Image (tube, rainbow, N blue to C red; front, side):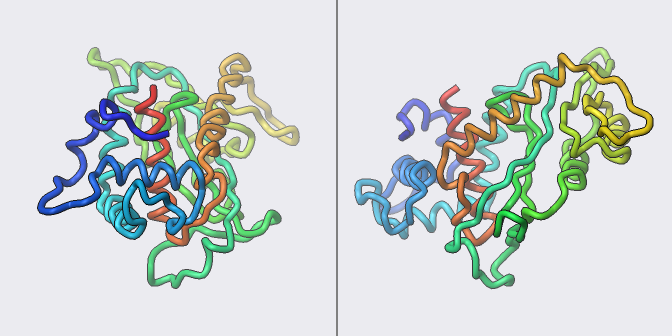
Length: 258
């Protein structure tokens, strides 16, 4: 689970340079955070070989709030993305542990809601394949998928043209939660071809590419990879910025292994 020296060197320059008498290197701190991410243990239970738990937590908090981890992810993403053909849009629900509740609202946003499953958070993702997320967000667990799907599409922006000025076809695969007219029209306006099956109670149904729709399993497999990290399978973090940083770090770790 720990980063090798070769893997760390690919991203080392994105982290703030350490000055003075620093006892915990950035690589050791990253490996300590990865241990928390994988095992889902409390910060105080972090093995001492990584360094003092409070030092590592504070460094992770600074990286999360300053956008360092987002910068690292975007760099790896640029290396991995090639000519896209299909994007997958979906969400998954994460149970919130009691330790993840109770923070004051003044400390920061907390996308935690109450649904039939208790306290939950939803993770919304647009993915290129089973290993590559393009963009993501979180919401309270009781929120409907479609409005947050539209927010992600707006953040993603219009389909880019190739060097010849042509806008190549790019399929957007999603399940029936996104089959509303507003979501499909937005996808078309942005240059994406929606591949979404109509609901059974639709009076005017449309045809869709069933072969392409089978690739919806890719975003489901991405969720399965993310939930292999116990700190994502269950939300223990009170603040959204920390939980989002754990998701980003999981995607970074997956990208470095690719």
